[in-house]
Image (cartoon, rainbow, N blue to C red; front, side, top):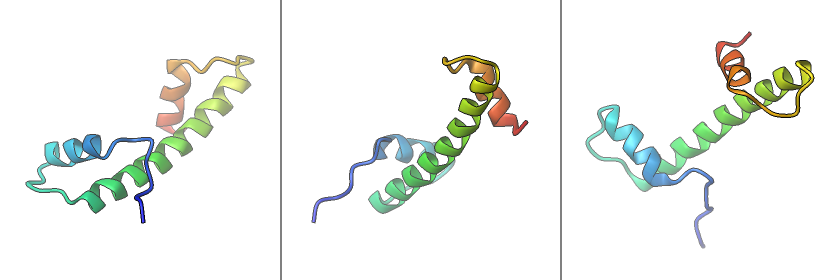
Length: 72
């Protein structure tokens, strides 16, 4: 059965985990990390879209991401 492809490359997740101190990272761990990152990014994105719409804009700006990140 073919693996499900993620929108975030596993290699990027492996690099993040290595920079955090991991000596070795399994493929499944990289894929799991990508799934978590996608979930978190989706939550952040929904908040940023809400701030953008509240400001009467269609274009998401850095400040929308910053507000969403702070949880305001």
